[in-house]
Image (tube, rainbow, N blue to C red):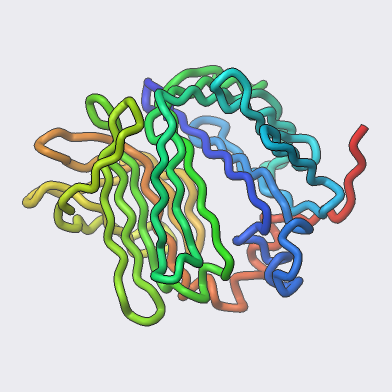
Length: 290
């Protein structure tokens, strides 16, 4: 999120593109054949890019992850992301540039999201600075950054019906909440405070704070001090099963604005969703590196 609060960006690298209809239709047998670097910009002139690419577009080393024309690389303690993507309909245009994430520290935290460890959340850098240099007017800015990952050996909808996640900056760190309802009816409820050295502390959970539903009527909730209410301050991504937004809540008496996500996996399981997604997620089976 930009320091001025008017712009934001998200970048997700996928091996096994969990929201790709093409990966689902393939039977999810070969995740390396469904790879993607998804880039979404929010604010004036925002765009969404998510191209599902085949195995020929994937190159990896210990410090580099390349998918077709875009790549992520660790260099000098920074995560550098080089972007060269084309946005989805109806606003088709090329998005090029570079994003640099500079962590204050890296953590060693891993949180199993299911008892058998089939799904893992790994917050690598809960507190970071971000520098955005995208080749579009107004898209050169600095702000608050974050880097995490999720790993899994089963499809999300096989184990969950609903989840929410939120990351909120604090004076010297960040607080993250992870809440989920599993298909067996059990609940995950976790909260961590991270300081700027990367040290993590599991915290007592404040109560859930309901929010207005998204434009697609996805149920949303986050956490905040008792007697306070959270509110959306910027809509980012709105889909029939998914919402991402900038949300303001109150933690320990202080108002803070962070990124919040809500995911309705009951809706995502619907076969009607996949053809809708195919319009926004084109498939490019082959790629040749020059």
